Length: 118
Image 1: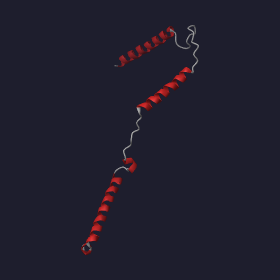
Image 2: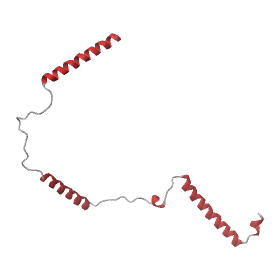
Image 3: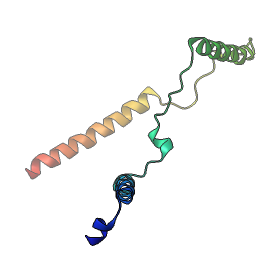
Image 4: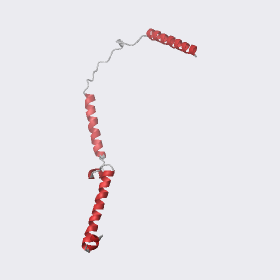
């Protein structure tokens, strides 16, 4: 306390200013360390990119033109499959009926076995 009483008014003002600066810096440091690290760029609000209606229309027209070229480049006289050509693979009606009957028999056997154990 003796040091404070021996200081001049000007020195006291400088000490008070320094103390305020130190307090401000400490609070700033506490904010940085206490929460997630935020840079000046992160604090600034991000401006969303918006596109004008004219630009959207221009891009849409260009895309439609590209698709028209792609679709128009296909050969016009595309050979169609004749109805006489039978689709490969598949299963006959008799084969499906046979598999269905076998599955029904398995389920009936499983249900009968389940009722006996109860």
